[in-house]
Amino acid sequence: MNLINKNPEFWMLHTASVQHTLFLYLGRISDDSKGAKSFADLTKHCIMNVSDFSRSEFLSRKPNILSLNESFLDGKVEPTKEDLAALFKTSSEHNRFLRGACKKIRSEVFAHAILTEKHEYSHLFEQVSLERIESSFLAFWSISKHLWQCYHNARTIRAEILEYPEKERIFKNTTEAIRGSIQQILPVGTNHAVMSFAFAKGTSS
Image (tube, rainbow, N blue to C red; front, top):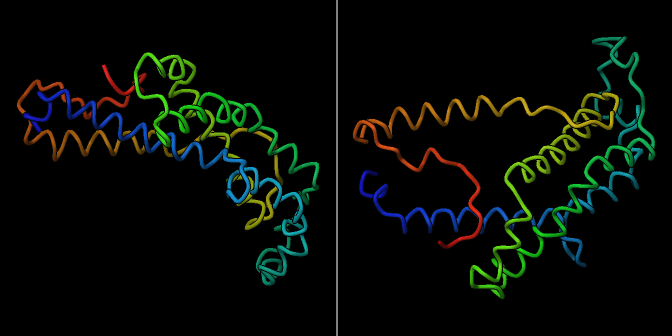
């Protein structure tokens, strides 16, 4: 690890690999081409099959729930197509973001390597940020969480972005792992780059 930290080429390769994977997955989420399976397909499927989230369908999946708790469904509202449309609308601005600069980066920088020089693609990376990408992921995760809770627990769907409860735990566990097992082989005071998750603009310096 000490030798790796003195090798900038390693971290340049590492950053490029992480970016490559990230933007390919972002492209999958927003891919609206024929034959692709993306978030847009999930939207259409849920709205077309809104009855899957109905009270009757829920009771067919969990027929004993009311015998266990007769008030389980009290106050819970069955979603309509309008409710689902409102929920999916919370991702609209994020869909536009992913289909804009992110899609162009995915297609022309990573997937097909049309833009290979930094001066050709640097302006694209200036249009994106890790914060914006995280916000997009949070919106999609919130929608999936609402759908899951409605389908499995008959909870009322609300068109709102949720807080991600695992972020601090993941950061804490990652930090402890690094400071534990890895720190044992690092000299004191080493500023190891593995602790940096900053989003780099471009893949070469």
